[in-house]
Image 1 (tube, chains in turn yellow, blue):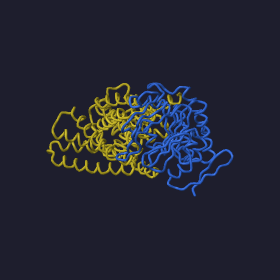
Image 2 (spheres, one colour):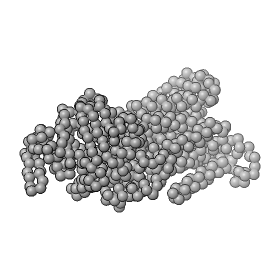
Image 3 (cartoon, chains in turn brown, orange):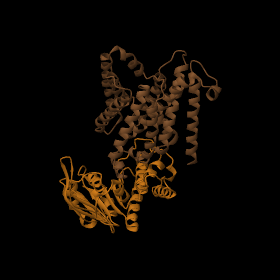
Image 4 (cartoon, chains in turn green, blue):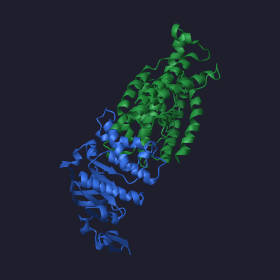
Length: 313
Length: 253
């Protein structure tokens, strides 16, 4: 118990450290005192929203990854690799295409990610969610969705095109604080914490879970809804960023074991920190030029993903 | 304790049994014998409330199983599955502790009491030294014992065991069978196990259910059921019986 408390405090400290780092570093570095005393314009209108965006989407993606892995009974499940992020992106683009207001973006994204994950679950269930069938279905779905995204981009009027492309590249360049996603992360992670005891046996498969008294469908539907909502919320603020949902749950389980009452909160914090740090590097490595944060994550994520597939088989 | 009335089970179109009326009483060890693919696994899963029944009823302490929640059932009935490959990496301790799920009020943590029960289950399966090891690299027999320890940690009073002895060496087969025999006869547990080893069934079971591939069954005391004629018909193989002063053994001709 005491050990868990220490780990929780350490993760909070890590979040704080990455937040400070993210707020102060950039194309122009600020001194530490700026955080405390100045009403710095750069800090408040540029850096703060961006840091919050990074933390929120990182946390949401890590949480979504945790849930999807249990739901699909496969540790390789990840919102990006399975095309669920693409589903959310397509939904968002359609909403943009029809010129609906910004509040509808999340609805479109949620509809997209929920359809994608339901389709994957239906198709891969026949093969008991084995890695090859799950990943093949995910890849196929991802390709199909990319094609749909291209079609939407092609038929979009030029006035919309720029903002669509910019957002699609997985870049955190919002200049507004993502209140809606922060609320979703806050309430969602509380709900997940309540579901955590059931999650510990859900990953064992349907029959085993039922034999231990978890009748299933109610929980499964709740987790499907939450996982797709988290993906949607992350995608609306940051576009398609891959591999956070894969790396972070793995690292967390490696460090903490399999009890989701501790894995879920820590994974959320670690996911947030990781994306804040990656975003800071993306802004500073080639400053003043900015790299999309997706590139930094992919450079870290792809080797880990390949390594995981290798060790699985 | 657990009984069925005119039960019929199907896997898709295939009929596993019909009009099956069974009574598993406290303190009894039942063995289910039958050839491969006759539906022993499905029968056990049906008794655990996992597989649906087509006709008839199952009663757990005179309450209809269909009307009970999965959690209530899991407090009384535990099932050992035939194969066991956890997808996610976890330690022996974590795996067994999670089996306390049906007994925990939803928002509480495991108590000292739960920890004691899991420790006793690990001791019973001689796994204490492997407690903090991950399950994945363990051998087939060790994993089987982990699965059994998790079942014991669930503390049901009806144990449905699907081929509990496979993967186990002779020492642990005997250990396991003696353990469950004592559990039935001293703690009034009900044990129902699907077996392939006729000689183990003859040694440890009080009652036997012979499950024929056409869906018919024969049930009764072990001595009445385990005859050379019945077994030869069951397995479609001529068998020979040898008897020493105390026990009988069968082998194929």
